[in-house]
Length: 156
Image (tube, rainbow, N blue to C red; front, side):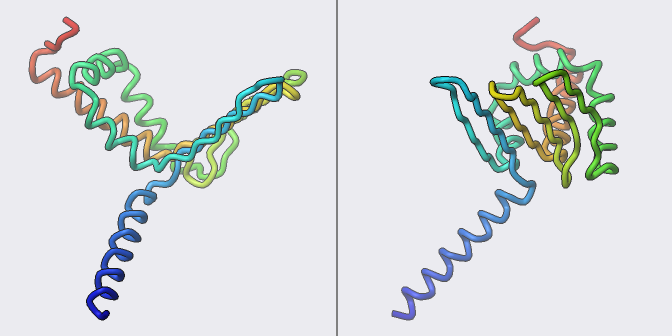
């Protein structure tokens, strides 16, 4: 009986640590609601730590191609997202035009994008800033490795 209790405690502790690690960067939240007949209602919550891990499984030639396409913008985007950490709860853009409304802000360390059209649809996106920084770091690493190889990949 004691052995069973030790196994249960070990399993529970492992599950708790794995859950804490998975959610340590936060959650990417995507909510899409269409208010028309037969409209879609999509609500996804994905642990943000999954995205950088998933990038490791992307074939190198695809990652190299993406990094080459974004090469000029990478330093700007990296700096922008790094600086967003200094503005934890800030409204950057808010545009209202009739029934349409767009809002871009930071909320508690996440980039928040909200697009609404009254009576038609609503889209809400929350992405932790640290996740975007990790993705761009991996793209930059891929670009620098491509430079070391002479820029040759399967796309050339």
